[in-house]
View 1 (cartoon, helix red, strand yellow):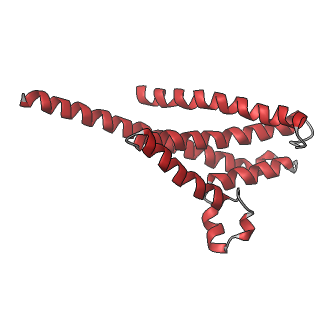
View 2 (tube, helix red, strand yellow):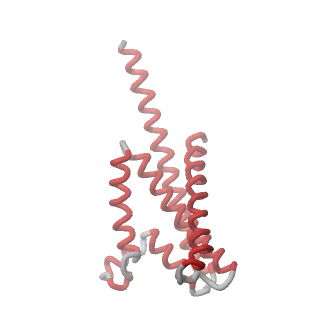
View 3 (tube, helix red, strand yellow):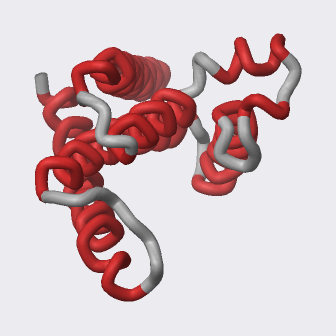
Length: 171
């Protein structure tokens, strides 16, 4: 349970900073620039929930990549190779409707698509229940990635322990 606790602590600490960023974005930015995030507290709270589900997924991707990477340069490279296509296919750089149907189908499996659909719905003041599947899928992906990262760390630790044991016996 120690590894999962470690990864859970990482996730919570990063989510704390994501929450601060989301609060600033939703609460403060409309006071500074001409941007609108809804009429009342409930609508902004729904948007905050959607943002946090997406943040959880992004953080989990980062933790999983860092677990499987040999060093920080490799991790940064892999994250870039994941993020740019995910943003493109998810409709962040241009509307998904501009892409061919096959690419749009692939884009439906991107966390950015789930986030954008839910965020647009909330901003249109639609019921959050209509987008609960987006949040559930995002959170499920986070759990899967954190579990994979935990098992990968266990295997790394076990293989290091075995190699140290073999090294001691050969001396």
